[in-house]
Length: 67
Picture: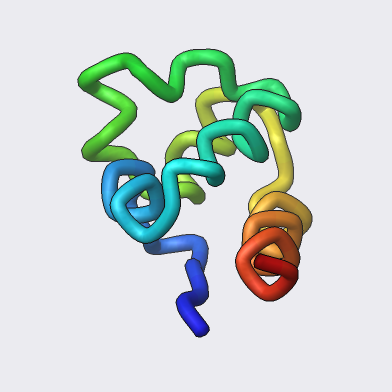
């Protein structure tokens, strides 16, 4: 099973599973399609959006585990 960490780049996460885009958007990251976001880590993207990183990482990994 694939997993992400706080250091996983947004682009890498989307390459694992495009469904992660929906998880990100539901969490408030609506710039998933922005070219700059592709090179940001999940941790960096969370910092930009004022979000805590670990809950989002957990939510993405839960999504992946339930596929």
